[in-house]
Amino acid sequence: MAVTVIRNTRVFQTMPPFEVLENVDVVISGDKITAVGKNAGSDVKADKVIDGDGKTVIPGNVCGHHHYYSGLSRGMLISAGPQTDFIQVLKEWWWRLDRGLDEESCYYSSLICSLDAIAAGTTSVIDHHASPNYIADSLSAIAHGMEETGLRGMTCYEVTDRNYGMKEVRDGVAENVRFAHEVDRRRKAGENVLCDAMIGGHAQFTIPDEGLELMGKACDETGRGVHIHVAEDKYDVVSCHHYHNMDIVDRLDRFGLLRDNALLVHGLHINAHEIELLNERGCFFAHNARSNMNNHVGYCKGLTDVKNLIIGTDGCGGNMFEELKIAFFKHKDEGGPWWPADFLTALSRGNVLMEKYFKDARLGRIEKGYKADLDILDYHNPTPMVAANAPGHFVWGMSTNCVESVMVNGDLLYENRRFTKVDADEIYAKAAEVAAKVWKKVDKIQP
Image 1 (cartoon, rainbow, N blue to C red):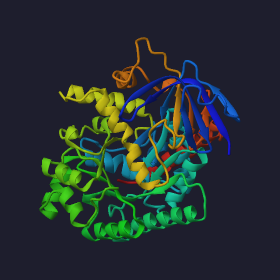
Image 2 (image 1 turned 180 degrees about the horizontal axis):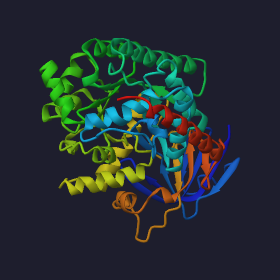
Image 3 (image 1 turned 30 degrees about the vertical axis):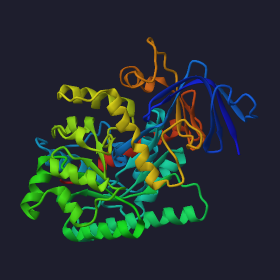
Image 4 (image 1 turned 90 degrees about the horizontal axis):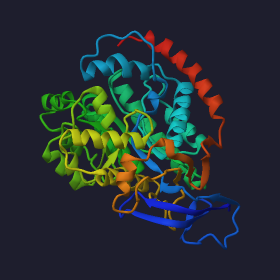
């Protein structure tokens, strides 16, 4: 079992209670932190010693909602029709892109999204996948990309009927269940599993009652929770009222989908009753500020009332330093009452959801017994940094420019700003070739 010591460093606990420890050693044995304190590593026979002088060690960030299938879309050159509302954006852009994906493009999307996340100091990503013409085994391709880079994460297939009706619904549910069982088999065989499963759903307006019922049964069978978009746009709310005569969260509850390991995403237009219900059920709720602004779908006025709030990007990359800044600034622009500590608490809470799936893991602190998922930052604070103001340093001062090294599960994936497990230059070059092929295919797909 390899032993690493980060010597004479500063530790900033980004999960409450916030704490700043100066001039301490962090000792890592295998995949876990075994000691933190002054001179804790002085008598340890280490395989690797990292000089932490002038550095800051923090728990790795968590992206609470991502779309890896968007990884090859950056700057995508295709002919598209009008995109004057959210549904047109989906039809003209994203629903054409996902229909153009195959095994190769899903795999390379996963690789580059994982590398981007790691370089940004993100050690865990919760993915939400779609590739309607490549459903069976698609989650294994996503998981392969995550695990090859060394990232911790979860993925699921977003169940929908938007292309092929109930066959597509059944195939999506089947893929979620298949992958969950694959993860369970690997764990039982003693493998080191870094990518777990959820039960995905696109949004209620593309899932019929039979589909939600099948998703509920899949949750029962696998022990996983649902991961679904909720009220991202007012259309979703109106659709649910029109066709089902009820609020969205009530509809999900009707099929037993509101559980303490469920993840509801966006929720811009849910009402006070729905927030109370999801809080009562212990659900998690992912806020995605950049995506909401980009799609011009509004602002979640009930954000501060959500108990288990986490932070995601909805496919806008894996840079959580950037996401948290924008989430905070947008909140203040809306006249919101929260401060950096509130948003950093939400960001760190992603670890609580991850622990519900990685049941043998404690995540989110630089502390004895916790998994060694951490960042080493080269952050030069121009003002004193203590527990009371450290979240302000995170929002106002820290960025990906500070990320020097990243460790996941005790494995140093990124050291002195270079990847250690894979040839990143080769992967990015190949991804560009794959993206060009995908764009040509997508350009021929009709909305």
